[in-house]
Structures are given as C-alpha cells and as structure tokens.
Length: 149
Image 1: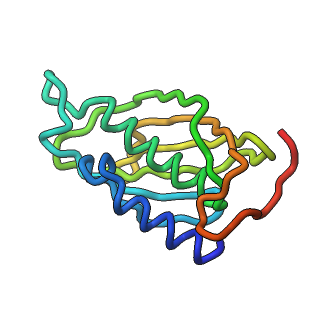
Image 2: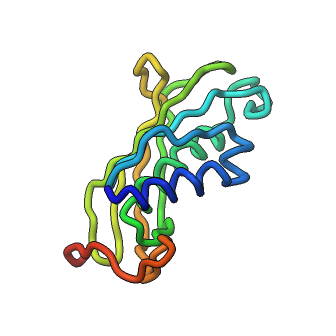
C-alpha cells in the first residue's frame, strides 16, 4: 500500500467525529483490508442493557469504509447486510476486520467480521461500494485500475 494512502486514512479516521464518539480506532490498513477496535461503553447499550446492534454495525461499517477506501479512490457504500450472532457485555473489546472479496472498476465487494478479543464471532457482514472517479488522496488524480465489474 502506498504510505500516503495509509497515512491519510489514519488521519481521516482519527478526526472522524462519529468514530471518535463511538471509540472506534483504526489499527491496521492495507490494500483491500482493515482491522479496527472498539470497547463497548455504557453509551452504546439498548434498553435491555446490551450493546445496541447499531454500535456493532457502526464498527463493521468503519472497517468497511477503511478497507474500501484503502486504494485511495473514493468509495461509498451501496449496500450492507449484517447478521448478529452473539451478544457481548459492556466493557468487551471488539475487533472488526474487513476483507475485499472482489475489486471492480466501479464496484467492490467486502466481507466484515466483528469478534471479541478471544475470537468469538459476534457479527458477520457483507457490503458493496461504488467506486467514484475521484481520488481522496491530495494531489492524486489517477491510481491503480482494476478489472470491470
């Protein structure tokens, strides 16, 4: 991965107001892949006292965003679907990984998992992005090309 892309992704994620509010931290990014973490807080629980599905979805979505933008080309979500597989408690540190499954010229498909630090699967998610013509890397107007989709 171009170091410039990695640095700008880390910078953008660290300034993202929603990610900061949720306590989401970008740990690793490389082409088509990202790994993030979030510790479930009291502000993220539902009326059952369990972490809100939206909080877990937000972590998966942030991993999706980092991986899909890891090529430097602006990518925006078209679809996402998630399956919640197990519940966790407040204070649990969650890890989200996003892995590119198919990179096309205008769309790309990703698989995201959310697990506990111990490796228990909490959620599984798929998402597709639209890859815009714009590049978010400052001073860039072209980048790697991929096969059509």
